Every structure is written in structure tokens, then in C-alpha cells.
Image 1 (cartoon, rainbow, N blue to C red):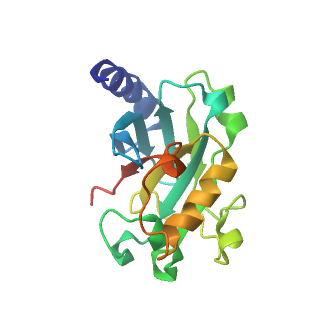
Image 2 (cartoon, rainbow, N blue to C red):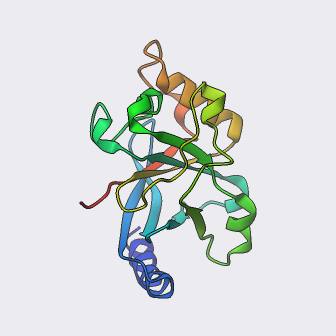
Length: 184
């Protein structure tokens, strides 16, 4: 795992110089069910976009990735923000599936989220408005990885409900999260 982290950091330095990024973080990708490390994600913040790379050791073809963006993390009930916070309108959260074609087309699996309205947002499915990425430097960005889209949406609904406050056992196995908090 340390070798992966070193490789991500070294290649990330090249990404940041190409993109002219102001901020780069590398965070572990944790399984929701047991908090074990399942890989890493790297996030590079630019003025009007975010560039990321997710490394799980698995096949990118078999994984689905989502951006979970909290544009106002100060309004979250806890730090870091949790899935329950997407239902709080003052967090201005958005849940956006990664463009899988973009991820597969990149030799390194890089993905980009530009600032602006989230035209692919899943928030309307939960009865909430799409916010997109408002400010790349101030948002808390979580990269969420799951084996399949239907498992992920079910997990979001379950974790957002007070009735299903606990996420243990096989229902959470395919879900992994890396949390990138703003440095300011």
C-alpha cells in the first residue's frame, strides 16, 4: 500500500504541474463496513475544477465512482460530512456519477469535475436540487466507489434514513469512501 501511495504522490505531482493546481491531497479509500483501507484517491483542486484519480487495485471497468460534494461543509452535522448531510439543504450537497467514459479513456483513470450545475446530479432522485460544484477550494469532496450503481443508490437511501443508521454486514461491502476536506 505504501508503494501505491508513493506512486500516486509522484504521478500526482506531474498532474498538478500540468493542471496548474493549487492544492493536492492523497487520502485512503476506506470500506464502509469495516473501515479497512481498500486503496487511495488523489484529488487536485484548481480554481474552477477538481481532478481526481481513484486506485483500488480492482478493475475500473467493474467499479462505479461518484463525486459526493458538500459545497458548504460548515453546515454539516459533523466533520467530516456524512451521507445524512446530503439531505440538509444548507450543505448544498450534490451527488454526481463520474463520467465512466472519461475515466476509461484516461490511461491513468483520471476524472474531472468542473464547477457549475451538476447536469448529471442524482439529487433530484432524492427530492433535492442539484448544486454541482460551486467552489473547488472550499468544498469537501468525497469519492465514493461501489461495485454497481443500484447497490450505491440503495446504500445512500439506507444511510440517509434514521431507521438504517448502522451500516454493517454484507450490504455495505461494495462501498468505499475517500474524504478530501478543504485545507482552509
